Image 1 (tube, rainbow, N blue to C red):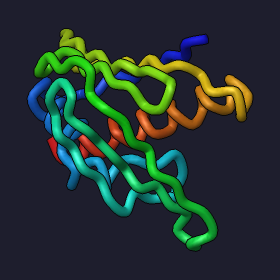
Image 2 (cartoon, helix red, strand yellow):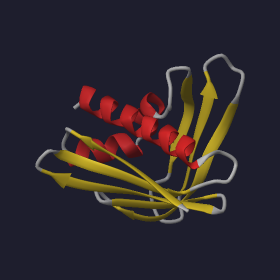
Image 3 (cartoon, one colour):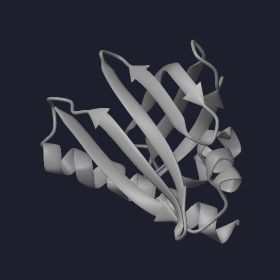
Length: 135
């Protein structure tokens, strides 16, 4: 089952793309709630390149690595990637009201679908706020 979330970012496509693909930016926006943060991020933005983000609870009680491999990269348009036995894609569509960013990913089986959707949407909402604040 695939899940999609999206947000429209009021910023130029170049700013949106850069914030989504730059480790220093990723560390600023990549959290679903204020009690989590990303302590480390790496990006090798090319087909076959690897990425990783270390996500941790701010109280130190839990953390995990989100990592995978880029499958296809079309600058300012598309990022397709694999993480474990799952796949995801990020689409960037510039329009008159900003850039629509849509993330589609394979659901996992450990957590309810709606919980997964809410978590990924919260991260994408943080992304939009970050980009608009720094545009």
